[in-house]
Picture: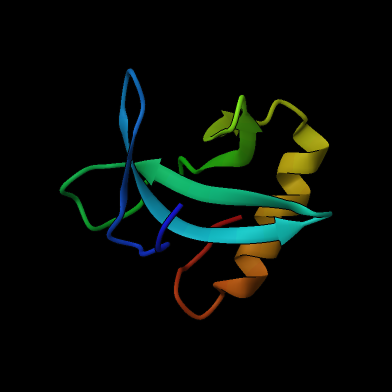
Length: 88
């Protein structure tokens, strides 16, 4: 992936996402994203996608492991505590 800017929009088959940040954890890169809307306020729905390589192509894959999700999300919160207000 070229540059990781918050203005980047990630498109999937069903929905567009806005990039918030990336986290390196245990040798993998994870992207924090929210559904792309014109509303400036984040409603709390954050998606974490893992960067994977499949047949030579970089792709994003959702993570199903709740414990891993919490670890990555906590790193994201710590890294962005001055940028966002977290309710949990």
